[in-house]
Image 1 (cartoon, rainbow, N blue to C red):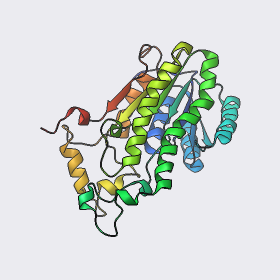
Image 2: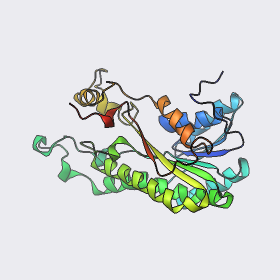
Image 3: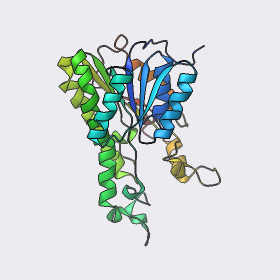
Image 4: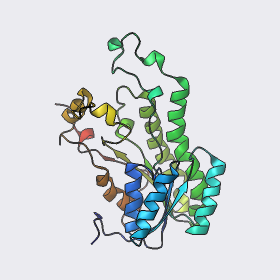
Length: 281
């Protein structure tokens, strides 16, 4: 019996998922495959997507793993050719590649708390900030330029971007990532408008606080106890918990289904355990 939260059938659909070597998008790729789709799992970490594809194919699902640099247009075109040959033209694109970088993160939440020798706002590395913007924004724009051509030809399709709660209200310490994700929310609305006459819908989800390899050091001490930042997050979340990656799947499957969400485009859906609804009082 399937463990999927929705009984949606994607049989015959070709789904391309970037960032599929990671926790969140790996779970999305798996969910699409278990729903009958032919999945192209893309990531710079080729071993991770090859392992994902092997596991899914061993269970009887259709998934191929491809090494892909979302910041390299020529490499993406080559991957596109391979996906066309292996699986067919893209019906659904999930732009999951993204992330932060320590070079674009401050050590302290507030400037008045900055300590000598630490990394304050004034010490942020310009190249690190540029990398974060490129990875998140261009890492969404470039795959869309490559794979949405298939959708324009079909006059149908769906694009799902990954925004963040940072896009609504920026979090302390991570200015570049917050601003980049705000750009993704804006770009999602732009794409929805731009492609409106072609039959393509474009939406985004904005995950709340998940524990991942990227942020684990910010949320937990080496001994496994929560950091002060974790305490702030949980205090500001009315349900007093983090979001699990699996809890993103229902919204993902819903938003990408043309029957369920045919009139939904240009939406950024928070999946945050109530964080955005709570004023703190």
